[in-house]
Image (tube, rainbow, N blue to C red; front, side):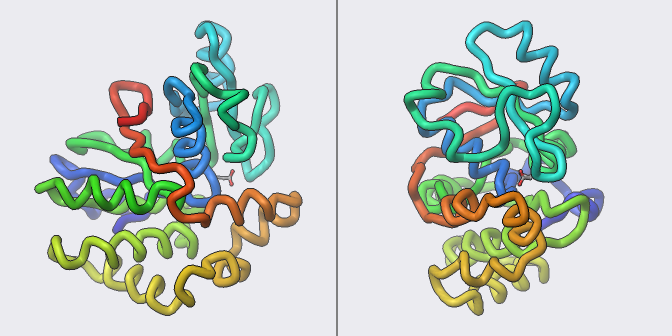
Length: 231
Ligand code: MLT
């Protein structure tokens, strides 16, 4: 269970890394791909996002900085912005403050997949079939610990613990957090988190309720080359 600031302490080589940014990047990626987007291209900067979007037919530029739609992009980082009627067949070029950043920081993993409550069960079923180390990468907020990504990591540890050795205290701590979060009422638990407070100041409570709804979008997004696609 790693966070960006601690990435150098973990051996990602040969591992499966699950990128987790519950509020909201990995929830948006999961929803868009399940709703028929052809792929999501994660990019580091707003300027790259605009340039790639301009050169790619049938694409949308999307993303945020500090939770707000970034200037110059067509769309934001809300999973509710990408229903099938809008996103089907399109490529989303996406840049976000923390989620896409962590994705680019992981260099030598065997595989990078995307985790969110929206695909919790299907992701865990997929991971249960693997025989590699699994690292749960919490995008967090600007290198600082956050509750929602750790809670989700705990939910994954809870589901995988009988099949895999849980061999670090960060994973054990995440599992404890999950166990004391009050079952499935995640949103109540997360109302006291910093990113919930940050995003609710922009009126984004509906986004966050959506992001903690389990199994709405049963798809496993995986990074292939420079694109994330549904497998
Ligand atoms: C991020 O990548 O930092 C987030 O997804 C921010 C957000 O849009 O809530």
